[in-house]
Amino acid sequence: SQKIEQNSEALNIQEGKTATLTCNYTNYSPAYLQWYRQDPGRGPVFLLLIRENEKEKRKERLKVTFDTTLKQSLFHITASQPADSATYLCALDGYDNNDMRFGAGTRLTVKP
Amino acid sequence: DTAVSQTPKYLVTQMGNDKSIKCEQNLGHDTMYWYKQDSKKFLKIMFSYNNKELIINETVPNRFSPKSPDKAHLNLHINSLELGDSAVYFCASSQASYGYTFGSGTRLTVV
Image 1 (cartoon, helix red, strand yellow):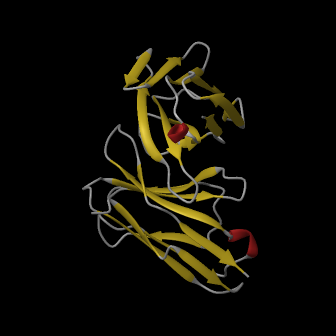
Image 2 (cartoon, rainbow over the protein chains, first blue to last red):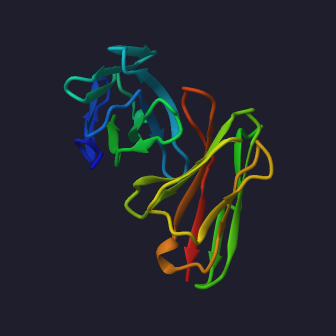
């Protein structure tokens, strides 16, 4: 069966460091991989999308890599800030773009 | 202007009742979705719908039914509510191969 696994349920880091979150998947050939941020009591907010033929995407302090051979994506937040504290969700979608599946999320806490 | 709006934000109801959650998007997106987030915070797709096709996750009970009066609305009807239906329900929309925009959620509590 298809699985999307985010390796850590929780990650604590010091302000200013780089946070690295991992998303692995099995029995899946996604066309797109996306990362979302979710704050308590709110809906997920879209951050970045990377396509199967792309290796890396950047947006300000965020960087996403996508390795379809390893079936893995890494999500980096550089120069992390306490305001980056949230749950980050990995999501995979096929070519039809109508069946996006989420991982369980990693709760990131950035300590001042 | 709220891009994807859901009402109500909170819904408390008794077992066996029938209820609806409304969703509207003003983004002009072609596809809308319903997701369920359970107590363990796991987001699970229930339905996706555009003007051509309804895709139902096979694990969703047929007590749940989406209704779309037009492209900007996708309402969720739930019949014979059960305790296990208690969760946060999120509506979302998307256009082509881009990120989804989610509503702020409806917390359903069945007592």
